[in-house]
Image (cartoon, rainbow over all chains, first blue to last red; front, side):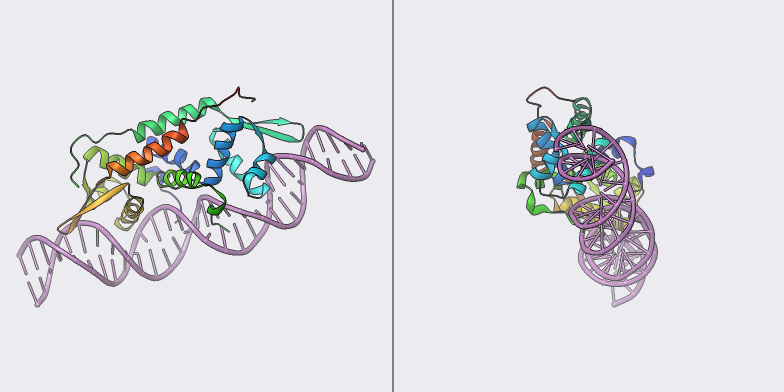
Length: 109
Length: 109
DNA sequence: ATTATTAATCGTAATATTGCAATATAAAAA
DNA sequence: TTTTTATATTGCAATATTACGATTAATAAT
């Protein structure tokens, strides 16, 4: 095992889980926060800012890029990363809908 | 390796990551959605509702309980689970702050 | 052309997660 | 008391994730 049984869940449930999972590592949280603050960042800066090896940061960036949360522009030998606002907003909407659920009746416990 | 370097991140970053990670599995998303809809649920119902083995559901419930997102009341031989509204709200606040970040300047890419 | 510089990729080790069968536990029913 | 019912725990196999050194690739600088 060790593999999620995606088939038995709804698309909505899987989407929420995939997005949440991407935010489920402090390095990726730190990367995103830094991109918001600085508003664009070369990969090397992140390696210094966060205390992880270059290969590790690159891997986390790849994950965020695959999900579309960030995008990268090649600038000479370096790559400038920044938040993809459109996709970030889409994610926000999905997660907000989930987080803002309300209890319909009284709570039993 | 395979273990997160928690020490090098801020408490805020770690908290966001831990909460997001808990939502990062479709089974836990499904459990939470069902608890919101039904507003209380014995574990057995969830085993039927979701298509996973009893032991697996129990494990996911334990994780959610440890984080404080749900609480369980023993009712005879069964256990009635429901959302812990206070902690759910606390989580919402933490995640909202993170998700609602705004880009200060123009985006470069 | 050669030598930095920078980021991606590969390979690998260590640990974590997912899922389930089997078993344990604890209360209810017989 | 014995049996049933419902959930938790244990142990284990399979897969995923995290992290990093080493290498590669691609451009810039000398």
